[in-house]
Amino acid sequence: MYTVVITGATKGIGRSLSIAYASQCVQLVLIARDEQLLKALSEECRVKGAKAQYYLLDLSNTEEAIRASSEIAEEYDVDLLISNAGITGIADEGEVEPWTQIESILSLNCTGAIAITHSILIDMQNREAGHVAYISSIAAYHGMPLTPAYCASKSAIKAYAEAIRGGLASKSVMITLVTPGFVETDMSDQFPSKKPFMVSSDEAARIIKKGLDRKKRIISFPLTLTIGMKCLVFLPAFVSDLILSKLKY
Image (cartoon, rainbow, N blue to C red; front, top):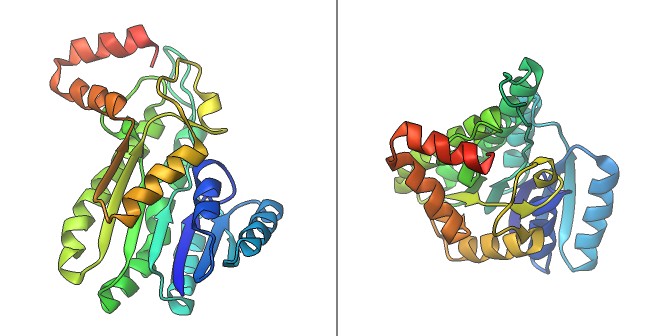
């Protein structure tokens, strides 16, 4: 039985990944905050032949995330963990984000996203087997004035995934960093500017699953937008700032 744990499982990319992995010989452990949606998704996955359990969990509560990671590690030999849950928030032009917004974004996207993997990673390290995917964003490559806390959280996840990937390589634990561009989800609906090369959550899940099946270390899409964001790093700061300002990002 191949065991897959997915956080943020009931919406967007997480839901599409849950459906994509649902098949015979797969044990799904689905994590999210809405029990009604979790029950419905679990049943949908069972209809496709998978075994499906769920954890009702708010990853912004670090203690609960650590406890859940420990419980899952004790109960299952996790083959693949996809740390996907995330939220965003928009900063008004010329204004600093409210602290409550900054704190909630960092708590879930960064601390919670890492905390849920902690005990499971230790178990994988001890078994010398397993695969963890951290869903970051192309926003991790360069901060955008429109979403400062979100960019910070995704940059942190990117750095953590890159660092721990090398650290656990000798233990045969695979780490994948995923940096998607715009995906058609409730979260992207909050973004007021243009969303070039946007893909559906099902298409994003297909790309991610294909990359994970191939054990890719980095999955980044779409290519054009990824290259554009990476290039901003090499430009003088005033130039990259001007570009982002013109694009209203």
